[in-house]
Structures are given as C-alpha cells and as structure tokens.
Image 1: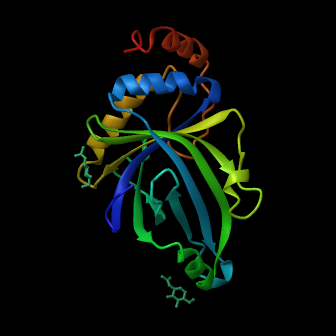
Image 2: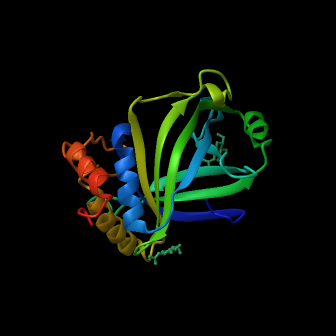
Length: 226
Ligand SMILES: *[C@@H]1O[C@H](CO)[C@@H](O)[C@H](O)[C@H]1NC(C)=O
Ligand SMILES: *[C@@H]1O[C@H](CO)[C@@H](O)[C@H](O)[C@H]1NC(C)=O
C-alpha cells in the first residue's frame, strides 16, 4: 500500500484461484521467481455503498487496514472504471484507476453520516511478495473470510473453504501500461502450471495440472520449473 497520504493512480490487475493444498508449492515458486521473502498479511476490509436514495447511482468505497502492521492504519480506497478503447478489451489484464487516501478509524462514522451503509466486511489472511520484474509487481495469496457478526474478525469464516485468491497487481500510467501489461503477462506464464490468471470477474477454475506441478515443486524446491 502507498505510503503517500493521498494518491490516484492506475493499476494493472489479474486474479485467479488456487486450492489451499497447493499454496505451499505456489509460495516456493514465487520465492524462487522473486528472490524476496514473503510478507504476511491480515487485511480487514469494509465495503461501503451509498444508499440508492442519494441518487447519482451507487458508489462504492473500501476501508482497508492491514492488521499485520505494527501500527495498523486505515486507507479509503475507491476503484474506478476500467480503461477502455486502445485495445483494452483485447488484453487479458485489467487496467483500472484507483484513488486512495489515509483516513482515521472515524472514517466509518463519517461514511455513515454521509448516507453510506456497510455492504459487507471481509478479512483476508495470507501473504504477499513485492518485487521488480519489468514492473513493480505485487502478488497476494489470501483466503477470504467473512464476518458472522459485525467487526468480529476473530470469528471470521472462509467464504470459499479450501480455495485461496491470488491477485497480481502493478502500478501503471496511461503512458506505460502496455509495458506493465507485458511484464505481468510474462510473469503469469511462470505461474501457469499452478493457476490461471485473468481479469477480475472472468471466472476461471483451478487448473488441471496444479496437482502435478505442485508435487514437482515440493519435491525439488522449485528447481525444475525455473
Ligand atoms: C448528483 O445528484 C444531485 C441531485 O440529484 C445533482 O444536483 C448533482 O448534479 C449530481 N451530481 C453528479 C456528479 O451527477
Ligand atoms: C509506470 O508508471 C507508474 C506511474 O507513474 C509508475 O509507478 C511505474 O513504476 C511505471 N512502470 C514502469 C514499468 O515504468
């Protein structure tokens, strides 16, 4: 997450899913590809939506905090529209705008006062890798949990038991996005034996080669696949 107080930027993103039993193999592969250590993450996310009676269509904001940080802070995140035209439909990577701002914990009360309501609340638990490989790539692997009671993060239960979400993102701009898309696409090819990554919202299942690829990664620590 950005250390700047406020920022608006573009990001390239792809997502996929993997069975929890193959996550350790994915971690070994990522470790070998990136050469950096993973960072643990435990992200509390609140999705806020405007009430329909506010007019102007519904808008959606995310209040996000990484509870793994020594002093967790809150960020409000608005995910803007996907980039259109200029071949954007042909590429398999989504390019979208994102606006982020650091906020205090009281932001939730402010959103309520503005007529927003809490749509849903999630806790993502997993790890991430940040590295430079033709772009500043971030890979996160996490299980997505939902709260049974308001803010009860200790009682969160998996949304899809046995399945974890993998997300690959990199910051981009209108000038360099083709370069960033190429870097992400080429990076994703290395993960192809374990999982298929595509634009968010495009449904892709687990890949049939995952079990064999995972077994081979586990037996030699990632040597052969590289
Ligand atoms: C939002 O709705 C209000 C009231 O209907 C209107 O005056 C305003 O122009 C709208 N704003 C936008 C950005 O559409
Ligand atoms: C593309 O531009 C963004 C925004 O300026 C920057 O953060 C990123 O590092 C650039 N990436 C490459 C590969 O040049």
